[in-house]
Image 1 (cartoon, rainbow, N blue to C red):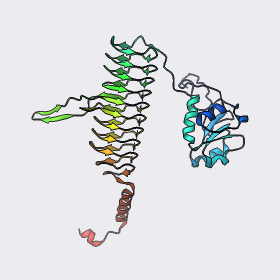
Image 2 (image 1 turned 135 degrees about the horizontal axis):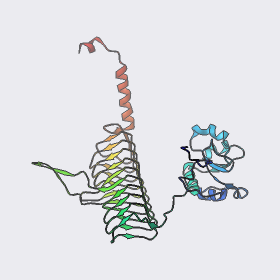
Image 3 (image 1 turned 180 degrees about the vertical axis):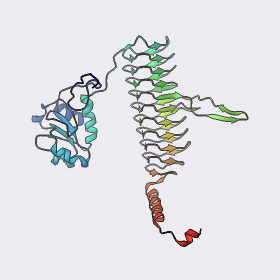
Image 4 (image 1 turned 120 degrees about the vertical axis):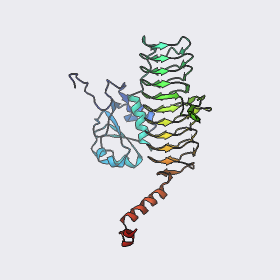
Length: 356
């Protein structure tokens, strides 16, 4: 590898890039994911996690999809997290950790072996910090970071290189701000993660038309981000114009998502890559928006609604609805239309059609 000998890694989690803990007793793993385990097995030591096809007798794996059952039959994993329906498929020699939510169990177990890196308190010598900024002694400020006047950085925060924290920005405890992120006019709650290159708090897309052309409308709102939100790489979230742009607690925004000014997103919403939400649109709790969907402004999407990929949403969406297409329509209606078009395309061309 370019003349550099890489460490031989057993399973995922190259130590050059990921912190690793362990080994851990199987009992601690079972407790973490909330499953029962015989007392005789609780002391069995597990050194790490790995996929079914690569795991060894001292490693943990999981199965969450029926199509991978053949891999389960041949696995050498010492323990496997599975749903009750697959428990009898776990081979002899592997311990079945049975849970109705195996993927959630896997997430918790993997985080036990590979916890999120802790901040290393201190301010790098190349960082620029305003005299009026308040930085908790437990925060880590990386190389070439700038922190503006009256900004507040909470305990356990980690600010990566070249990030720009604007005047007055507030970060709650244990936030993770990636390299080259810019934050302005924003308040972040606890445990917010912002991946590299994201832009938060910039001026929204607001202008009036005058006799000589466009005139910018001052954007006087903020961006308010709740606890446990994740914002993907190169996402953009505009600050509000006269109201605030709000991202509800627990929501997940993928890479390259665009959020316009005054948008209000509820709790635990999912917005997938390259989706765009125009200004003053409101998403209630637990809404899912798939990749490349576009929503016009000033509409409301009800609780637990699901918007399909590349969907064009031009009016309100009722709670619990599943819509797809452009313009957006219910799934069944969309696929009926597709079927009708296919039937028309297969219809033989008549002489009357040719005359037209």
